[in-house]
Length: 220
Image (cartoon, rainbow, N blue to C red; front, side, top):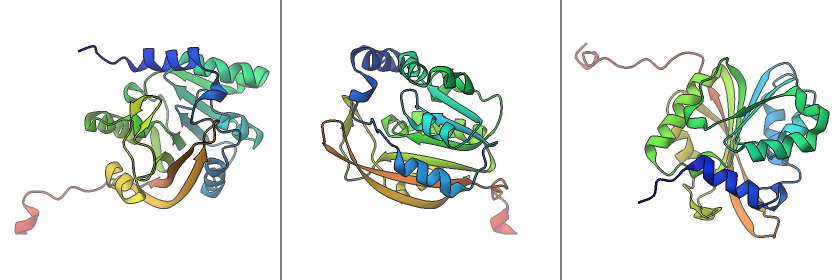
């Protein structure tokens, strides 16, 4: 059995297709932007977009005046697409090339955004690693926007199996550190007009750590 190399896989995707020819491409990420607006974060607060390499979301948040934006993607080619599109504005973005499961944050963020990354982690251990990184990266009281295929969405994307969610399933996956604020459904049309159903969930990281009940508590 050949080991799957995610970096090699996603580099090939973006080397063989235009950034506008992948199924998840959006000309205008309306739902993400509406949810970002609803968080109430200010232009000086820190945003990190997970897997946002070729996405136009970074363009739009810069247009909204945000000054501290980080984009992390496993594909350098995807990041190159965005840099070329932004031109001089690309200098205003922190670009990180790497696998989110191995990310070691050097600072805390006010908002974590992920559209169509988490649902590729079909292995529970990979999901656990992702969530542990999220816990270390988002500040207490910070917010998380996650978009995955809905339960009615396709079982595969870009040739890979995916895990599908509703808001309850996603909240359960994230555990007690994050509380669900709201969820929104979207019917996304691919560049070739196929319909994909997404669920977007907005969470807040709790400001106080969850206290574990000691083994002796039941007897007290």
